[in-house]
Amino acid sequence: MSEKTTESLEALRTQIDAVDQQLLDLLRQRLDLVKQVGHVKHEAGLPIYAPEREAVMLSKRRAEAEEIGVEPQLIEDVLRRLMRESYRSENKSGFKQLNPDCGDIVIIGGKGHMGQLFTEMFRLSGYRVRCLGEGDWEQAPKWFEQAGVIIVTVPISATCELIRQRLTELPPHCILADLTSIKSEPLQAMMKSHKGPVVGFHPMFGGDVKSLAKQIIVVCHGRGQVQYQWLIQQMEIWGASLVEACANEHDEAMQTVQALRHFSTFAYGVALFDSQADVEKLLQYSSPIYRLELAMVGRLFAQNPKLYADIIYAQTKSIEKISSYANSYQSLLSLLESGDREKFINKFIEVSNYLGDFAQQFQQESRVLLQSAADMINNR
Ligand SMILES: O=C(O)C(=O)C[C@]1(C(=O)O)C=C[C@@H](O)C=C1
Image 1 (tube, rainbow, N blue to C red):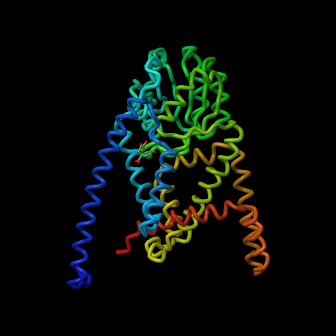
Image 2: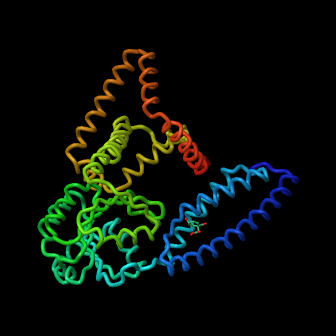
Image 3: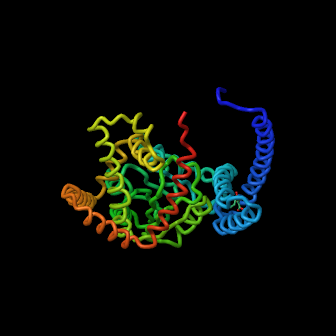
């Protein structure tokens, strides 16, 4: 170590080390207790995520922190990070199987990231899962016969055709579901192909999450809700929050939340490339918020291009949203070129008023995020 030090600093550091070791022992104790919680929840079929317990616990610890002169946000940060660890640990204990008599779960496209994740979750809940990949169609009729649930999770561009062509003769009692990120067309296709229970899901996360705790899954009802209610409850036990939506409304929201979002990130990456920006240099000057921006851009380009092409091209209406965004951009650029600061400021105020209380809420949330981003930055 080349950093300067003194004797009294070293003496204090020795004491800090001792306290940190005690913290480690306490962490071990907490993790052991959480492991036991995992077993108890498994037996009782209780959800991994307990929002009320979390809220009460956090508010009590914050108040206690304040009393002894500790920043409340500090204990909240620590506990939230610990609870993330709890979700992972409780995952390992597995989950109660809500419908042991349902037959097999067949996941079409089970070898992709999302398919693998759901395969694991069903297996951790005691179900027999069969993953049907492209080369397995010969087995399909036999597997379908024994299936209680068939889940389609193939690229969006292939989903509807697959449903129309391959899923027309399923056992009548069998639940047909999909995990596609658009809902209207796949749901219609499923309703047409299958006369039994039908439900559409859209997991609002990538296949790389470590636990489903706190993750949102949108559910669009098709037919036979009574028969597939257990499937929704099973996902709640995994910790997911199920949000009901009408397929059309969901798809319209996705034009903004996904297509427009990803497209503008894509365009930003392309602009960096076109100008051959020196990323290494940009990183040296980057503020935490810019670091987050680059993280989003880098994250997109680290993934499968086909996935993003699929999402952006999934709905023709997305192009309308993106082109109206381009129009706003172009007119703002003209505003900038005109040098009219007053107009810029007025536009700013207009949007700020439109966001209303959300602006404050987002500022607060981003403060916490930026602080975490700053903590992660290691400049040496
Ligand atoms: O108390 C529980 O139910 C737990 O599972 C433990 C714990 C925690 O780590 O404290 C973890 C997850 C829950 O959302 C709430 C709390």
